[in-house]
Length: 449
Image (tube, rainbow, N blue to C red):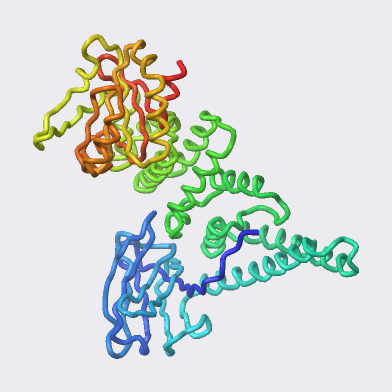
């Protein structure tokens, strides 16, 4: 079983004033006087809300801004001017409370919470789970090392079965508790490989169970404030991508999750993380599949960054014009409606970066089939993400087509941004008028036709 070394997290719960007021945490850390700190909440991503210096008497107040109140979720108080670091990862549970610590190097027992129950619960749940998993790991190892004929094998097997049963009981209890502490431990278990399955299932079944839980049973508000938002969404995309390809099922599960996210900010962040992961994996076909659902949701008010793909380069839209930098540094505009000139019927735009193994493989396959592409009356325009002119000249000098461009701005140049390309290679096929027909991570859709 995949395990990670336990990191001691110290958690605390915080409560709410009323909706209009900030939530407050009264801190007393006299041994940390003079230390500077950051206070961070989790709203999909890290959201810094306060900086400060601990005064000489060690008493100070952390505040959850009123726009987040009443806040329930994880937070992080982080010491920033110490080589040793330090701080607390804390559960906030809608109530004001206080935290006292009178020693320089505190353990869990040295942190005193008043008005808090969630932190003790989380620590207790984590400790119980760790004991079961540790015993299970030891017995699993013993059963692998010793043959069944060993006189103690039966003892190992009995204890192994006992821990499997204990974990099943614990897991059922954990999933039914319905507290933030239990929810955040379930979420954390995804990041450590524990998952939500019985201990006896194989890795494939474990991954399938995780994917199903995220789709059907995840508490998305708890995940949004857990500090694991992007990691869990990325894992969900990975799991869905590992399954036998079924674009309709991916769309169905994507929409099922999206329908649960009523908060526009949460929905926007979810789509952003999904799109980022799909782009990184070259799954442009799945981006194309979910695009109508994303646009129909009307929950996203600003399509920028990875989200710009849904406005700029979805199939059926007019391709953006290209900004071409000549040898003198002057910039001219090449209109997409004029790409397919001189008798061409289509245009294939190839975004690449030299040194990217997959890019070079795709470019070589295009070179091998160049005569076939020409016969199909498809014009090739290559846009390089290189930042070194010599590298660009050496690579583009091998091409059989004349239209290859590079502005030396890498993948942050205007053409990459306008076409929402964050990963290479990315291939677009356009019709004669410059309308996007499809977007893929390779050229097989053209070469194999």
